[in-house]
Image 1 (tube, rainbow, N blue to C red):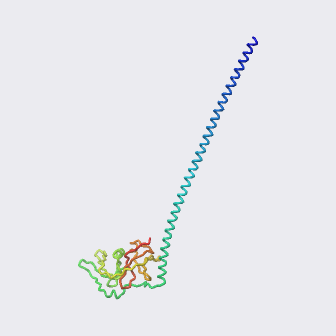
Image 2: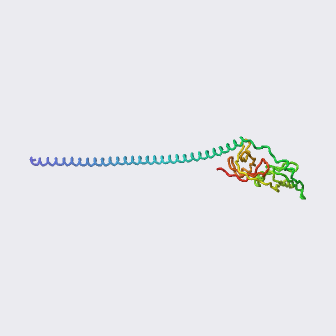
Image 3: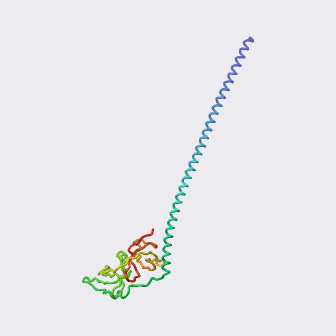
Length: 257
């Protein structure tokens, strides 16, 4: 082979080798670019996930703070309501204690007073039996019971006495039927006086009283509970006019709260 042909072949081989190297470099660059793009995408996804996580945590944190603030507001309102209620109760107790101390200082209440015997003696109380065999008994209401002509006491239902606003000294008639049923009727009410005072309660025996200035009158429990009265309330009572009495009838109660 001539030297010229040898040189041609050599140049061809070198060109092929160079081309192969160029192709390999180009492929490698392409792969590197793809790797770079993949890495960048992965970093962006990681960053995005981090942002989402941070945003979620922030939102959760804000929601928790708002819930906490709302709970604190609710607790604060509940505390204020409780304090307001306690204050109103204490003020009522204070007023009641003040009135009781005023009463104890003067000590002018007659505890054991009952209807004057002279009042009962002047009355022409009757006791007889009608044609149907029913007993008819007249008597005087003493604030709780009816006293008959023979000084015998007859129980008067407290609900009836409260509803009828019976006052000490009222004349009543009791009809005792053959089956033993008691029927009461008010036949001659006494003249009344109306007073406004304070409702108090003796915690020792749960007895209610109406106090006006330095005097007090005993009350039927049924009369107080009918108006849902409580110690410290303002009370309107009826008592016999011009006659001393131990009991009073409840006409009305004005609640303080």
